[in-house]
Structures are given as structure tokens and as C-alpha cells.
Image 1 (cartoon, one colour):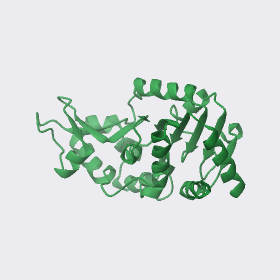
Image 2 (spheres, one colour):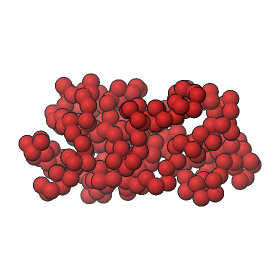
Image 3 (cartoon, helix red, strand yellow):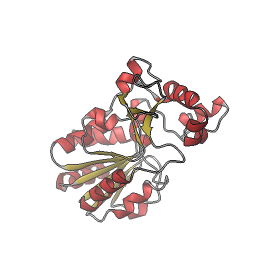
Image 4 (cartoon, rainbow, N blue to C red):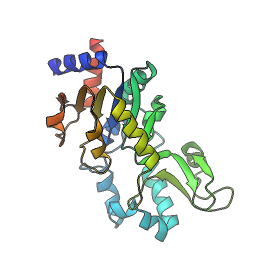
Length: 244
């Protein structure tokens, strides 16, 4: 892996407008299970008798708001999870003015927790909640501290600001992500199989100089990338920092 790390360091050092595109694999080192991997959240929640897709759908929210909110509190809110070295490395490059920001498929909010400010969360975030009746907004910290399931203003159910199955991606978020991709000189993909559409298809809009993929498994875009590293990304970033 040494030659790959050296090449990665050269690319990062030469880049001035990096964009990071991240998926669930980035947060595995923080203790958050990959939804679809063996032993991940999809395997865990399917034991409840419903399909994982249904439990994470607008149909379930409409049919049983209380059940959906209880599921959210039981399965999705993870107070003990913190950013790992990958999140911190990405935030540092943004802070240094070398990165345009992050486009992420994740809903855990760990990029923001690590200090990244230009984050396009394609599937929303668990860091924000809002009332279905009056749109009152709450932070994850407020919801967790009070075990808040009903709006303090009107009593309506409170849901996380995430994109459920059956809902559309936010078009403003998509537009910001496209602007990043078309302005970037380097795209670094981390921890995603690049198969979940329409989010994954966004990377085809990148026209910059360097395309890097760091992921344990192969992706449909591997042949298009300048550098592909199939290894643990925390190990990759630690090795990269040791060369700096």
C-alpha cells in the first residue's frame, strides 16, 4: 500500500479544490453499522417483523407516526458515537482552505460534528428534527436530552430531517453538490459502493484532474478513477498523515 499512499499524498498536496463524497463506510470506525452489510442496521431492524425499507419509509410514518418515532429513538439515535480520524482529516483540509467541502450519503451528522461546515447531506441528517404539524425545529441534543417525541409547542410528532423511502431528495442540496463537483479539481470518494441512486450518479458530473476512490470493495467507477485503494480507510488516512 506504500506506493498508493505516496500517490495519494501527491494528489492531495497538489489539489486546491478537493471535494469529498462519502458513504456509510466512513462511519463504521465510529461504531455506526453500515446499513446493508452483514450485521449492519438492515439485518438488525429486520428482526422487528417489518422490512427495513418500510421502517424507514414515508408510508410507515404516515400509517403509524408514534411507531415511527419510537423506532427512530430506539434504532437511529446514537449519543455515544463520535467522529473518527477520517472525518477529522476531511474537516482539517476544509479548514486549511484546500477543500470545497463534503457531499455525503450519511445521516449521522458526524462530518458536521468533526468541524466540516460545507456539508451537503443528500439524505438529510439526524442532527435536526422538526414537528410534522407546526414545523418547529429541534436539535438532536434537545430531542435526546428530553426524550422528546412530541412538539413542545403544539404536541405534534417530531421527526428527524432525513429523507425516507418514498420522499424526494432536496433539490437545493443536489444543486449545491453539483456546484461542488463541477468546481473541484479533485474528487475523493470514501466508504461508498456508489450503487445507491440517484445519489451515486452525481459523481459522473466531476470533470476535474484527479478522481480517487478509497473503499474496501469494488465500485462501478473503479475503472474511471486515477487511484483506487481497497483497504481500511482509517489505516489509509493514518498512513497518509505519517508521510506528511
